[in-house]
Amino acid sequence: MKKPALGSPVIMLVSAILLGGCGEPRNSAESTTPAASAVKTKLIRMTTPVPPGDDLSKMCQEGMDRFNARVNGAYKMQMFAGGQLASLPESLDAIRTGAIEGGVIPIAAFSGTAPEFGLAELPFLYNNGEANAYAVIRLNDIFSDILQEKADQRSLGCIYVGTLNFLSAKKPIKTLEDLKSMVVGCDTPSSANLIEALNGSGIVVDFSEDYSNLQKGIINAKTSALQYMLMAKLYEVAEYYTVFHGLGSLYSITINSDVYDAMQQSTKDILNKEMSALAQNLSQYYVTLFYDLVDDLEAKGVKFYYLPVAERDKWKNLAYPETIATLKKYNDIGAGIKRIADEANAKYPYVESEKQR
Picture 1: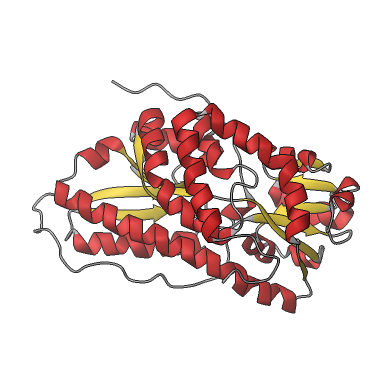
Picture 2: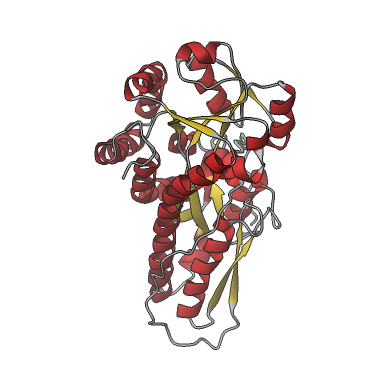
């Protein structure tokens, strides 16, 4: 019997899905493989909204190829980037029903299906990218349980892909007073709400129009990750970048529960090990990428401003109480997320300098 379709999700397309740069993950695979199967290779198609050729999709395929090699032809995981199999709004439900076997998707985009998914990207939840990356690895079990209950799939690993900060064309954003005169383009209602909490004017805009919107002055600033800023050449029309790590990120490597349950235990063990290692490698890659891109963008004329601790505390005090209130609504789930975030933040405090390390 075909499973009924879920309600349409509230789409939270973020600039961080358009990723740039290049790099190689560490090889975590062990050489052991199960015996070759006489059964025809089973294809596990993995959907993602990330464009073909992007670092995230390329590095995911490399990690999946390590799984493919270890299962000796029983399964083949293959990435289908750029929404080839399903658009982002359709992807969660397509994986749930088994129309697609799995995906690498930003689960906060589906908070309309399960509000708990939105807890992954609450304002000021993390001090910086290092804390965000540390936390998402440890949040996998929590979000996997939610995915199994709400969408008949499980998470094999959670990935950090960057933080959103302020890119400004008008002037550098250094204080709350600066924000009062700004119209800030945002990708999601949650980020627009953050701007409003900081006494600015936040409006949701189509990211494909960011360049022209900044050039024409329709918006004065934009929430943006560095990799997207470089790819879209936004540095040509906006030169000021304020780092404050106000919004984090979480992508999940998901797989349909029926597909997973049909695997032999030895195959499950390999899949879990390889995808967990892939998620950790990718998260660390994006921590490092931030600093690498600072150098690239400074060479293109971008002026970076790192919000001082005291000033960031003022910003956080306006928005973080709502984050805490939201987490409390979800009882044990919210408490678990807060505990992991607190642990990450204690390990990686916010500092007003280029490098956390």
